[in-house]
Length: 387
Image (cartoon, rainbow, N blue to C red; front, side):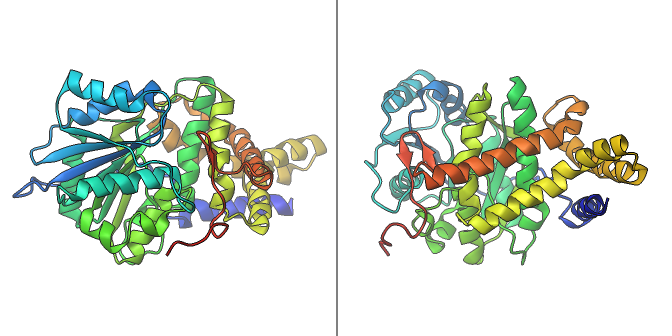
């Protein structure tokens, strides 16, 4: 019963004191038309993305942006014809100018994506843009996406404006796992705190990051974060560390087109970076597992055990904690247009995430941690620092 009391107290604290992370009303601030639209270069790192590129790249080329804009797609050693397909889509659809580059294999100490981003930013510098839009190859943008991002950055004085792309939720496993992915992210990095000046909370969503070019130079992006597996959070921290102002919210005009039809696909997406989030620290792993169990698994267990064992107090406390948990999840379930009863299944989803986190650590110690598309990255500090 006392464990259940602690769990309920934890949920009351999360409900009221964790930046109202559960609310989904943090959307792109509206900004007026600037006097002059700044130039923007869009950088798209892409490795073996031919399967999704036809659904994403045309949306970038078709941006209705009043200023000068150009797209740089960086083909990061693809073997599926990603670069050739990008050129073909540009010829077919027209729109913004497209340049396709290739950086070669990343040197030691660099993740492939950030090495590609570095190459793309280098190509973009020749155009002297005021802003850089870093967006993934599986992200589709509404025609006014770039215009709205720039207007928000101008109006709010933000150095980074990032949107958490709306992920696909069509398969059974996507419905069960995907909304919780964003929910847990917001719990770790409450969006309201990120946008508050002076707050130390920093995060971004790597699928859509509008970044001031001069701030990229000041914060040494991406060189300063070259080894980061969770590069979006590292980017936001570097910008805040350089005195920048960061905004992150949920998207309405930005969508991921990548499917995750099987549990295996979602499992790999989470487990490849979960242990990196814990800084490869076994003590943090143990604390995380214990915390997930206390917060998410104790309430339903207390309800069942209390009811079966005749302890009404334990059952009622467990039911209250479970109700608060489900209530905080309802806004995210609604945002994704899913049936509300899915909120009751959050303990099951949290248990899956607990297993994914443990598996991430196991894969790390087997030498297969942070593996993605044929590359496995060492933990920071395991490779020489190139200065």
